[in-house]
Length: 337
Ligand code: EPU
Image (cartoon, rainbow, N blue to C red):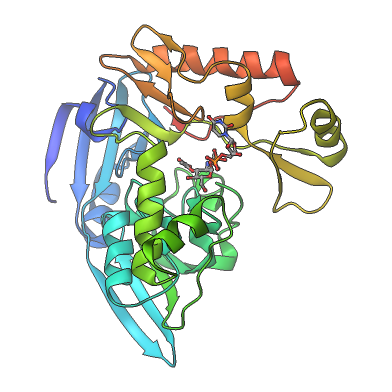
């Protein structure tokens, strides 16, 4: 076991920086350690806390928290231009992206600077700027806590969707991710179609891997708050997927409303929750210690000293306002505990 804590303050282990206590937190370094821990203690209530970047604690946690710390990144093998890279769950996601970019490996560059750990990436199938983790994921290795078995799930068994996977559903509370394996490419395959990416890449001198990474980092820094300075968990809400006919009625009323195709096919489309919240006049809204970020309305922020409960109250207010104005339900993306 790496380290073990009792009655630990989670403030520095969640990016919202809310103050809550956990009864017990154990850091683990290997599958064996984790297997022994579960076999010995058979905990009734437990959860994985990785980088804490997509979670909001609203109360103290009266169970066992396990945190992966092994963070090795390695090339497994290379065939033609396909390179398989394995990252242990505790590797910092953006360190992994930087590592692959430095080695000329294409695939993860559009996901630069997403906060969090590699083991959390498959859970919500992180995505940004026209790419998702699933696009390059080959498999996910996990430990099933009831049996202690370690299994490698091929990506097509992980039920990946928009910010969704089997790890949020059937395997929640049953499996702990140990590592993720990606298939990357030595052949350039730039994806520049999203928003400002192409403009920023051209300003940097063209579509090299390093330029794409740099462009994405610049765009993110200009819009999204740094969790070290302002507590937040990235997008607090998911972009809602609605019936096309309904979206077109809204579009007739609000011609500048963005509409995107959805993974679910032609009859459903995705709306931009940030735009909806913004048009309700809530961007930059502040209530006590919590607020809606002034540059990106999808992000709720802790201005300092907020409780999880205050964040939830603001989230409910935002959801209610969007529902009343547009008749659209926006679901939370963040895991609320
Ligand atoms: N918009 C506004 N006002 C706002 C925010 C957005 O009008 O305050 C408009 C934008 O102008 C744009 C549209 O809404 O027309 C979409 O905005 P943006 O391109 O910023 O992307 P997003 O839908 O807000 C999603 C992801 C982000 C990811 C970006 C870039 C979700 C929930 N969020 O945001 O992911 O970085 O695309 O690809 O899908 C995260 O998951 O934590 C996250 C930051």
